Length: 96
Image 1 (cartoon, rainbow, N blue to C red):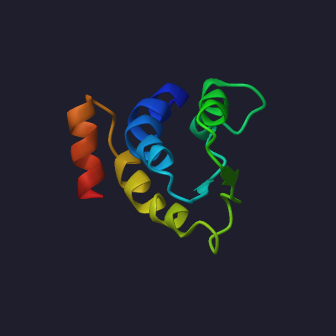
Image 2 (image 1 turned 90 degrees about the horizontal axis):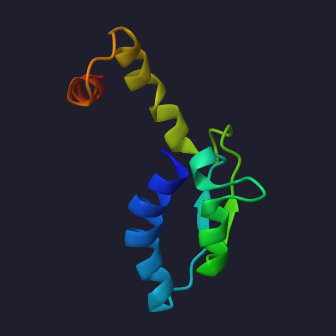
């Protein structure tokens, strides 16, 4: 997911309402480039402007990021086929 996609699909519609409600939380993220772990980028700016408390977890640790272990089987299934259009690729992912 791109940084703009992360803002548009996750931060604005899902996280921002929590911030605005005054909920007490800290967002845990892995080091995916879409999450804005670099020094200066649009996601980092968004987080600062919205006063979002967050931290980056160790994405390679299976104990701290159990979801990471779930991605390999569908990826291996999709790799068996050439990528056609978005709909076909999504169908292959669901099969995997």
